[in-house]
Image 1 (spheres, rainbow, N blue to C red):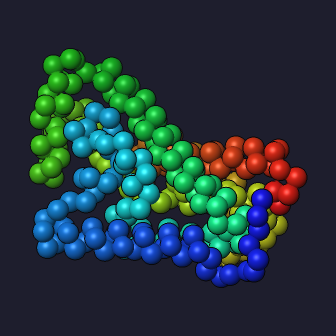
Image 2 (cartoon, rainbow, N blue to C red):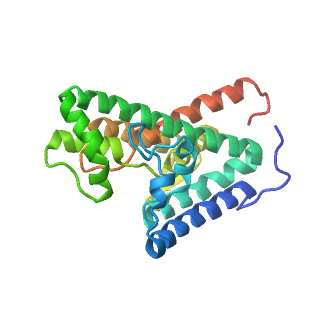
Length: 246
């Protein structure tokens, strides 16, 4: 492993990721408001059943965000944890880790969503499923949904895109907790907690909220867990195959 020659508070990959995410958000706003082009439709991660699904969305969804607060939270976490990790790992390994955890997050989210889809479809007739497949897409495009709760749930599962760098960011959080377990993190900028407990808390919270499956919760909790899971096994693999990992 090649380590960086000097410490930087804004290393190269973190800096470029911050810029790219900002540009994608700006493009989403400008194209939407000025040209009525919905960039989320093309770059957000859609389910396989959606007419908008494209394989490249497994990557592009990581650079899309739904709101200013969503963007700022993720970019703050990217800077907070990413600069330490890139300074230790070097740019190549850091980018590899970031992309793999982001892809893993998207993959687990799709897998869990497909399981939820299969459970929901089991409660419906073939005719109802075909109605959702044929009419649901246009309904969502017009910000509408079925009044029947089961049809509406399936339609939302089919056609609601997922955006955000959160999966990769949770991967960074996991890595920080594993490499710097006793470093103090200030929860809500006030409550001191060791990084290892911070990671455990968030992991348990995401698992709990994911299984709660609250209809009003639009957060992809299993994507967050996916980033942490893939990050854990990648770090274990690197540690096993490199005496200079740390």
